[in-house]
Length: 292
Image 1 (cartoon, rainbow, N blue to C red):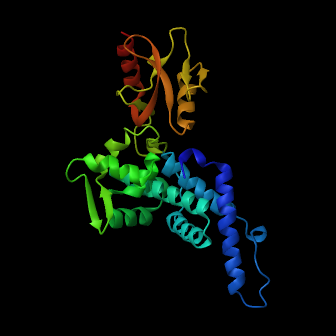
Image 2: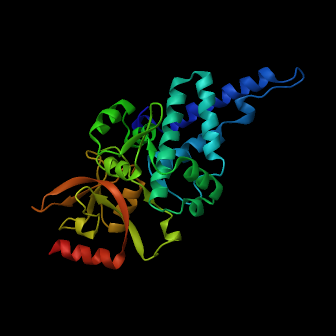
């Protein structure tokens, strides 16, 4: 399962399938006088929304206050086990990717000291993850974030520095979180974390802006000389007038992409490898320097 194969329809199909299987099991084991349940009576919206929440944080990296619920990690694990018993390959592969991406993303966030417990009001859940799993990532989690196979990762990590990759038990391998973060920046399909709840614990005068691989940030200096900004996927780009409107569009994208002038003045498209908070005053100074 790949990132671009997951959409609203995927969530509905997987949720309906898992809930239908669960209802069948309940009916099979119930007493004879039990009237039975079906997805018509139970619905599957709750599971669908769980998958959406895991996708928002895990795959797309958007930290949104209250977007996770206390039992999401447990329920996602249960849903995955049910999909395996059901032998629903598409469902199990989708839930596994979402689960691996979610755990991997949480480890990245915790390593960056993002106050996840406060943002989601889930102290026990995040303390449990940190105490049991730590910050280092399993290969499956790294693969889910990078949108590639574990086999490809094994080949790529064969040249990793000594100690960056290690075994914990048997064939299970983990990757040091600092190396994992640097490695992920080189992956074109990795969506960097954007903390949309960061003002809860930080300077409200600053704003989150995407950072390109060359270290430049999205700023008013990215505007064309005649005005306006170009943002979006190559071949499906849009032109907007204001910096605020452009930034809002970039935040809404799974992976922010925009055009900005290079040293020769040519406008090329770049992708975000990170997001960082920048005060409005500093952003204005950076813009003035870039335009000199």
